[in-house]
Image (cartoon, helix red, strand yellow):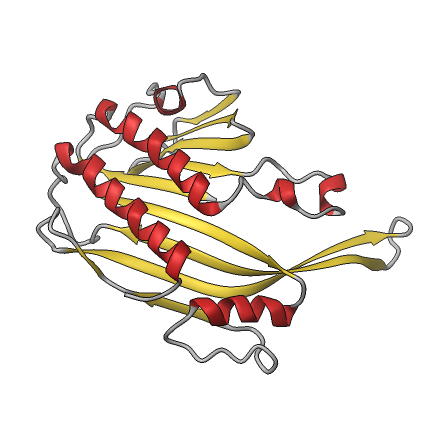
Length: 239
């Protein structure tokens, strides 16, 4: 999952078509909830599902794999991924940077949010992946379970007055279990078990800021956020 979020000083009109501006295509479907000030637009772009959301406080774009089918749940789950992380980050960055010059709304904060998984043959193998990516924790693959580690390494920048970005990393091992029922109301039978090492990143500008970010620097800011994400993908957790 890849997501960018822009926190706005004012709510956008619900007639705003942010999906087409970002994707270059019209959405497949749309949902407006005027009482809540919410618009959701959804479409398939390059085999992935793109959702554009307008709320009273922000606009965000979320790229996810298409819904998982029953056949895929029994396979290798390849369709439950948009692709290799660094390649997908590069494509999403290009779309983001191409769209930002069209964005004219005062924005006080921006973020890049990522959820990525690496497949493993077992729980122990998933923890070995975590071991190779975590420098602040001593991971013991044969002994550990239920590990969840989260840290914020503040990354220095000269682009904004605050002088840093928040670089939040969350790491864990996850298990997907495919089950089936032999008959309605009958007991569930485990068909397939899969293990993954998972990282979630939330890389953002400080929340304390009240004034808008310089509009002409949004592209540079996002380029730096994507660069930090690639650094985590390549080198793991760390400053």
